[in-house]
Length: 351
Image 1 (spheres, helix red, strand yellow):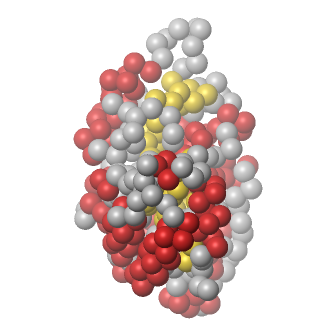
Image 2: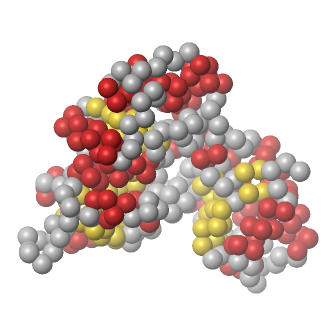
Image 3: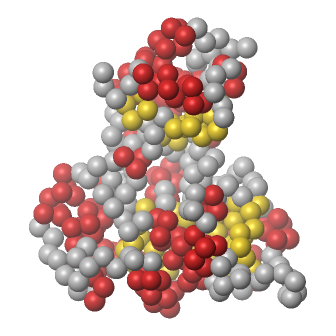
């Protein structure tokens, strides 16, 4: 039985182009700025993202934490959407390492309205922590890889400028948004002072993320990267893969991931008890509400595993499927057939 892994797009393996590039990459001490491939990757990424400088970091979580530390001071408060990855899924690093507080504002669009953000900005009062930063997330992980409204993304930056606050974009899957919108990356990065993008999810590099921003920001970021253990010395093999990851032909592969997610979502939506908001299937995520089946997501995932389908629990009655280049269109058809047969076998009917 073939396993079809729809848990996350972090399962992607390096492409043959990446492996070949890594094989021939020269090496040097990156902490001294002497690794040619890291220098090339950071220069390319800065230009690509429309920022003065960029920094290669081991992970997106580290990149986001470095951004928080570089933009703020201990005791500051960070405003972001309540279910943001930075707030919920990065082990509270901003609080533990940076002494920061998080002010979450719930908004299922993935980004709060500017009126809500403005109301959350602290006044100059000794009783309150000062607001130090506003964060956005594109695409939004917890809401199923959705793209927040562009007008709100732009409005947040305008509001932040008025209050003299920086904006950081957690763009782990920003290029999924770029592909889905059929736009260029700088049309999104221009609305943030700093941005982090992941190279190791849908783009298929083995390790690493990019943090980009102004020259003074990156100078601070370099110190925090070292503090957090991100000075990795000979990084050439990894950065050679990262350079391949950011090429147009590699980015364009994300389009197939999105198409596969749509096929999967439409097929699942035809099964009894499967509730899917197809308007939310904008990139490579599919969120499925199985409340009507009366079976919990944990129980359902166990059943799916038995027929070779791997998925992720996203709530008591919510399952998340994520497509990637490791899953073909044929795999999607096999998965739909297997799930349909499972439905018949265990007799699932909508209540």
